[in-house]
Amino acid sequence: MRNKRAKNVFFAVSAVLFASVLVACANNTNVPEQEVIMSPVATLALNQTFTPGTFTGVGEGGYGGTVTVDVTFTATEITDIYVVEHNETEGFANLVIPTMTNAILENQSTNIDVLAGATLTSTAMLNAVANAITLAGTDPNLLVPGVHATIPTNTQADVVVVGAGLSGLTAAIHAAQNGASVVVIEKLSIPGGSSAFAWGGIAASETLFHEQMDEMPSAATNTAFIADLMNQGASVHPDTGYPFLERVEQLVLNSHLRISWLYELGHEFGVSGRSHGVPPGAPTGDGAGTHHINFLMSILNNFEIPIYFNTRGVELVTEDDAVTGVVADTAFGQVVFNANDAVILATGGFSHNQELMERFVPNAAEFVQFSIAGTGSAGDGIIMAEAVGAVPWPYQWPLGFGLITPSGPGAPFPRLLFGPGNPILVNYQGNRFVNEQAAFSVLSNAMIEHAPGGAFKIFDSSTAFTARGADGSVDWVAIAQENIDSDYIFYASTLAGLAQAIGIPAENLIATNNDVGTVALSLRADTFGRSSAQSTSLTQAPFFAIHYVTHDIGTKGGVITDMQYRVLDENNDIIPGLFAVGEMSNRPYWNQIYIAGTALSQAISSGAIAGTVAAGAPSPVIN
Image 1 (tube, rainbow, N blue to C red):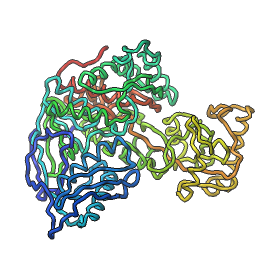
Image 2: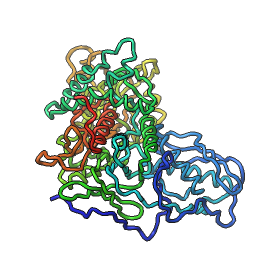
Image 3: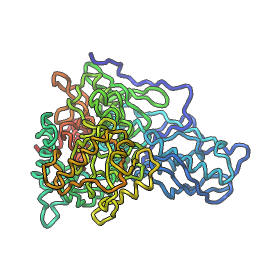
Image 4: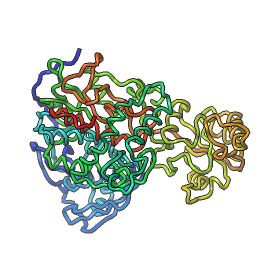
């Protein structure tokens, strides 16, 4: 039975207001605010003053290491913060750094909350500024931050969007363009979700950009794009039935409309020459998902759509079996956001939800801690939707990206495992389990199925692994030697000694190397399809191993919807008033293989359709 809850607005306001609640993005000022307590600057306790000037501070603990800042002071005020150097993911830093800078300057203190979803980066930045404050002659612990708290006031709209990633922002804008009033809520302190980490362009075919070319690239046609998605989808576990041809055709045949929509709104595009599963010439931004997120946030601002951060949807409100709102946790307790027409779930996947991963993809559960998906991807939408009768797609799967060392992407080891040098990849049994030259997702998927605990890249000291070349090869031996104290680097003078150091059966590793040698001599075909030219027996001591684990950038799953992204129940009937977009409904588009740029394309497409239909307008697709 579906949950029933009274359709009304209520506030459960906590007796203790949080000291600093970041509810408005630095780039969006159109958030209705009811100020409860406001003190715009910190109090310099005990007559503390700053030494005027600029001081450099270094903060430890970032996702990629240290963050270095230059902080400028007058005798009584912090006036400027400039990030000199950082090793954080560029697109992510582009969201976090401006938000944290504004928060510190507004509060005149580092004694403020870190950004939800950006704990490591924001902590390192706070530490860096605090270090500079110390150098300026003041104890940062004595700076009392201004108390700035905001209660949401716009709690009713025609359409309530839960999640401010690419699909959610797209849905909100389309709903507003079609005359609906809209409110967006986001559990984190910043927008973007997993889309903020995207490094590729938006996959699309036969777009206005392609039309301007002297000759359209053959791979940029609708026919080629559809074939690419369907053929690659069938290459691994075709028995699952994914991808669905009708869904892929809708996505591809309408992809040019999504690009034209962005272009007409004023979005700036480059043209990608990338052919990594994406049609060459596919439009892209600056190579990072934040380019698209920042643009959509500016459009959201133009439409004066209120967006509330640090506001987590936890339960759907229903009346007569229709979804009529969402209950959200805020700093003040729970608030109900009522929807006159529809709730659109754009909450992302379940990459960071251990329980859901164990339920849907048990073999991948051990790798949850290594996911680089947006930290908001905790399965909130699936949990809420199931509670009102939604049904998850079968055969859910991680959206693979590649392999990293267990220390994370901040480690000095290149993520790409394949390439020149012909290494051997073995599991804890010392056996190969995949073609080492395969694509990212193939390697990740194979590890999930055949390499519990991760795998080891095995290489020797031959020229193939020491030369830096124009082909993109790196000096793996030098990298290993420079980081020899790492817990994830192993070396020995013999393969047997290397196996002992790793903790795998020596006889299996030696036999595996011998088998690769016979393939290299063209004496037999490789079990995993590796050619003799790509196979090399490892013979030159010392021998090295790097421990790798898989990581994902999202999940393929969500709940079953129709082609207008209306959520369906177990009887295949529409649950009135409920839509699911992005990772909340992306399973039909891929199997276990992922093609770069298609997740962004699916996010925009699903958001455009759901937002339009939720506003009562016809679906914006070409059938």
